[in-house]
Image (cartoon, rainbow, N blue to C red; front, side):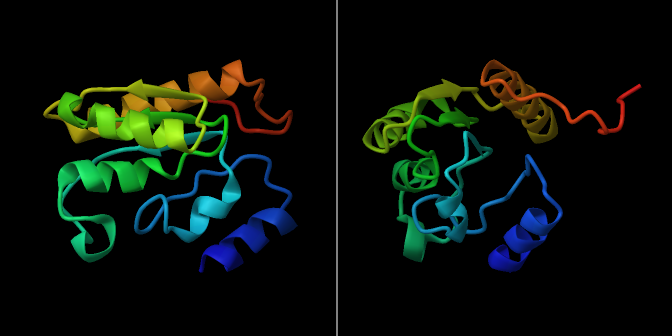
Length: 135
């Protein structure tokens, strides 16, 4: 599925794509992309047989999606931030921005998206000339 999706993006000459990891960062097939910006939207006790059996272990595994010199934007509780930062450091990620989760996951995801667009803008991303307008 991932290969077919990436092939379709390449054939359509997509300049930027939002790609969701299915399992987690280190072992996810999307890890080959080397994304400039990666988002960690939540950390829960899921896929524990692969990701680990503690929230800190899962946070570190998911943080491993960050590419070398890439930015990681993470919505994780403060007590998990050290595990996320350490894994990003090991992966030579460029920066980690931590957003403490609120009671509203949708609002958190909107804020992460805004932070991602800001980061991409700092990295020189621009909208295509033929992109639809937000107005």
